[in-house]
Length: 156
Image (cartoon, rainbow, N blue to C red; front, side, top):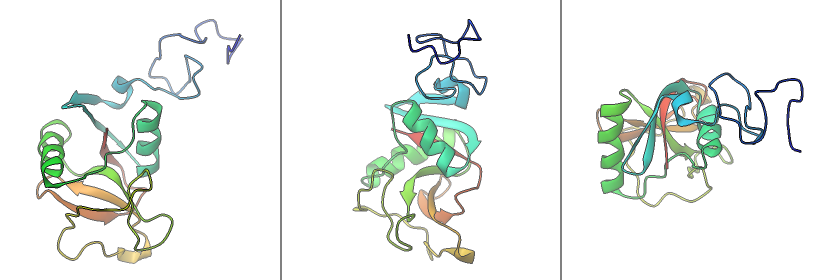
């Protein structure tokens, strides 16, 4: 019962998840194994080097029982920056977004921002299309970016 593909004997509830763009274990998520996204666990976070859009990054984190990281304070921001620089390189998606209301930035879980670390002049909604937040690992500051850009990401 619960077999999501009777035509394939390798697909069944509890099957090992392969990185093949399918839901091998019938749990409703495709490729929900951290190795499919080139993720490394460090300090309780997953640092994923596979470059994805913000929405796909969010979905991947959820499929792994996590969410895009919420940066609560300067110490956590620095921990994520340092680990992302070492494990992912470049900029990484974090849970920041203003999808609901332009200019009202919240975290992926809907929580309001307490701590902020915006880069100088950010967020600026350049071209009226920057609704997702990234962490600049070189500076430890945040930028608003186009949600369709391909970046690594961090789950907590």
